[in-house]
Image (cartoon, rainbow, N blue to C red):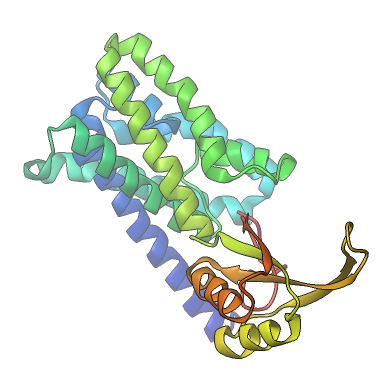
Length: 291
């Protein structure tokens, strides 16, 4: 018998997937499809095929996804694929349902279609990915690629595959304007998707070489509540031993840290560089599943 907490967790999971599928349907029905925008992925292929053979974007979405879902079952097992099948079915349902019953909300503007359609699609995909599912299609293919190339970000992989699909859409629809706006939509989707999945967690990495390392470290620890490490080195020119302060710090705190250094030692040598990801207390967990 399932534990009550497990049941509640699963209900929440499928509720979020349902909401995300609704957002995906809104992006398709009101922004992408009316403006002939191929947003990439299987959705883009479905929109293009629907322009040739009008069966409904949702129906094309399901038909194309069947062999890809079978690939997903083979690679990730049935447990993972059940959530994906549900997400795919909900996306198809909401896309066709909204197109049939709520046509008054359609936006016939390519700029709005590219920007809002791309952003909504990215938010939807991000929520679905975070709940260990996908919307099928290229999502599954990219999840397989992420297993082989974990250093590549999901949004970047989507961008690469979507470019191929957009070129295909441009050839079929024979409209360079549509192709260019589709490219804008894909770039927005890629950026927002990485934002949803990984957050704005770019941090700063500080290296501070000062004659007053202890007081600077004390103020960093007490006033900013950040960790710091002392690295022992030696000046190449003077030969003097140096205590170098190394600190990973959230971006918004970086100006405060720099101000502390300026106040305590205006002659300090400080290197500020970007840290794309930081793992450990106060940041990401080592044990979180990579998406």
